[in-house]
Length: 474
Length: 143
Image (cartoon, rainbow over all chains, first blue to last red; front, top):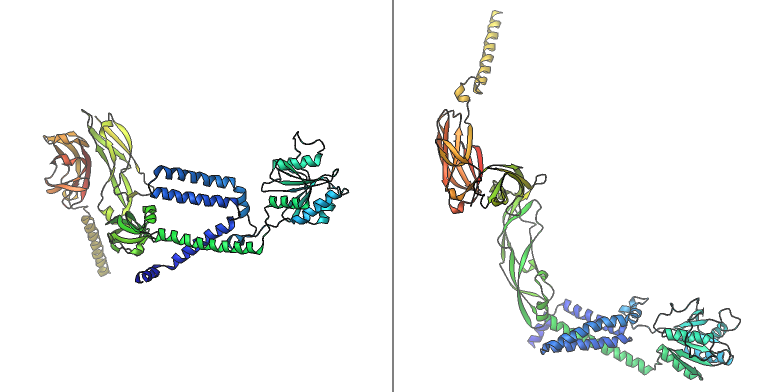
């Protein structure tokens, strides 16, 4: 009981927010994508991933590699194959729909009105061509459509295909519960085996159906027959019920009764609970898993140094920190995730002693400090100053036999150096980089850099850092 | 009237004496010996000194020669005094040699024995009895 209370006390408000947010994100992903085919594949992928982790845990090396590869490739394939579906889900007009509420069912075509209208047109021997696009974009296949965007009614459909109407020869495109376009010219089929009595209207219906996933209803003016064309299949329809079934199947409409709606609500509640349980367990695995210790050597960052001062010396340049956290967190932890900062804002010239506390160390969430060493840093600061120093050549190696270096001329012979005042007080000469004597065969001129030590020393602006050395040998 | 002219003569004479005094302080009439300063006529680094002359002058010396000399010739030497040869390896003072000078002209030298650890840039600062640097000679000891 005490252990449980200690556990409850150890939970921070950030942990609760963390679990709640992630659970809600997972739940929303389910709500948004559950009606898509891609969702089932995603569930399959999740199982693959779980299986892969299981294979790793029991030491099936090659199996885990293979499944890992399959998962990666499958994820890529899903994005490519279901791009249209994913896009249609994410392309919502109201951004609120992504974060709240159930996705609204798209407006469905009033199938009964359409079926009734089609059968009526057939009886009256009025030719008609009605296209119901599927998921594919048909705009590249059709042409000359006139935007209509009208509500569907029996009278409207009849009047569009009335022989005196200027657009009666073209097709109409029905999207959702609207007649989107009228007078549309569909691509003609080039199939040779079509019956000879098929006219242009039938060929257009077959042309669109075979080049897209649309369903096209065609009414013959001569024979008063109704045919449905989908893919390369032409199906004659005799009854209104048959037509309704075909349309429902194509548009993916299922008549829902109240029990279905209740079932759906229960399904969503279960999904919400599963999301919370899943995220909570993942959170516990990651954030409250078995403790693991890791030690890093972290360089100290000095902040807010007065620009007029420079760090002359520091007792240490890095501190050794022992960190604790769950295995997944410590495994993914890198030294650059941890920072040790010392504020030099209030430092003075000379020795400054800083005691390092936990506040000086920034860590990623879920990682805790066990210990660090050293706890005290001694930083010596100095005021920047300038000093003119004579330049001297630093020769090395051995001069070839029978040669004597008699004279060396240096240009510039004096350079101004910027550095800490205390540092400059102890320096009386600026030496060049080492020049090997073996390369000297006769009197010559050499251009060489200064070798300033320590590196904090710099040549003052306006002074050359390249030194010209003219040596005369005999 | 005569009394006033006497005062003029006294004031004029005092002014002339003051001017002369000031001139003498600056060395104008203090004698040739006190006007002369210690001057280095020649200062070189060499491998040896024989018969008061430097031999094998240079600015780079092999450690193999064993010994380096700093030869200095002062002309004039106004009075008996001494100078110092301060030998520095990089910026560290390693040897300080005090040398006496006799008027009117004097040649003197100092030398250091080279060890394996003495490779690197060197300088010799020649200072007078009051520590003023008269000249700096720079050289290197190499393999």
